[in-house]
Amino acid sequence: MKVLVLGGTWFLGRAVAVEALSRGWGVSLFNRGRSGDAPEGVQQIRGDRTVAGDLTELARHGPWDAVIDTSASELAPRSVLAGATALAAVAGRYVYVSTVNAYRGWPDEPLTESSEVLDGPPDADIDYGRLPDGWDGPDWYYGRQKAGAERASVAAFGATRVAILRPGVILGPGEYIGRLPWWLRRADRGGPILAPGPPGKSIQPVDVRDVADFALRQATASGGGSYNVTAPIGRETMGGFLEACLQATGSDGRLVWAPDDFLSERGIRQWTELPLWRTHPGVWRIDSARAQAAGLTCRPLSQTVHDTWKWLRDGGNPVAHPRWAEHGLPADKEAGLLSQLST
Image 1 (cartoon, one colour):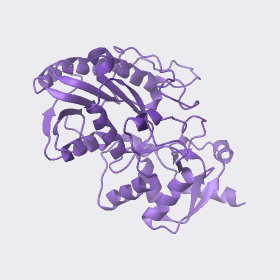
Image 2 (image 1 turned 120 degrees about the vertical axis):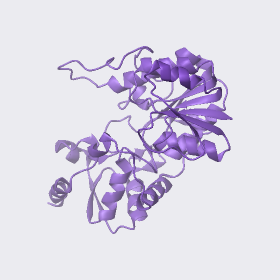
Image 3 (image 1 turned 90 degrees about the vertical axis):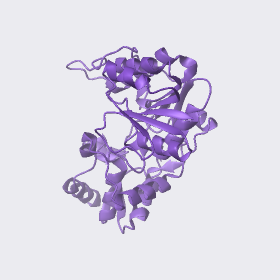
Image 4 (image 1 turned 45 degrees about the horizontal axis):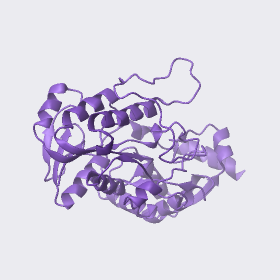
């Protein structure tokens, strides 16, 4: 089996490459060489996905049984279309890693694969869907871009040769966003820890290695389709997640639970200041039964937590990314909120 990974040097792309190598597959990576080092044993092809000549040169290195696209998060649909078109004659399948943001109803409604996907043409440029000045409605820009990129992959390869993966939150060793690393470091610091309630609320993060495994399964599958790639609804909770952070770090910290309305009334930014906390009713109601039936297996979230802490303690250094700075609550702000809870 020969696969081409678009990306392949950090987080999901690297996990895909490492897992494919462990199976004895031939692995080629295509990237600019600016973020992280390629795993040993791959064929490294340098190039820029937005440069036509680089795509033409890439195609000359084929053929491949499948392309796994993990690096299109900031590309316009038309760039995904150009790349997929260049590869359609030299690859059997295309596995495109999208996001649940592509659904019109996320994060306000429960979702299945039959839920409505946002508009977004396959040849859209990077400005498609940007919000006009004064807009106070939902921000669908990113979702429209990803929906257009999904359509671009299908336009180039055909529906029966494309698998679309829509993860929610991906955690695990190598994470560059900073959600789980922030919680682990906060747990390690100990003391009273502001925890966003309720503790029994279901959450659905998925381990990066499980997404990689499922992407490789789809690389060898037949037929096309889309799959929500999340942990099962109701299996994991915010309380269990934070307790796992305390256990992994050996912390003597104490969780102090704050109700949703307490945090919302004080303007705490959902999703970032307290990572993974969000009050929207559909954010953790994503049905992934179809993916599970197709072979998705999700390890316990506690294992992801422990393995990520080990990676950090062993010197793990995520690729620098601006989103890292967005996550976490400053210590003085947390102390002030904890003081209010105790009065």
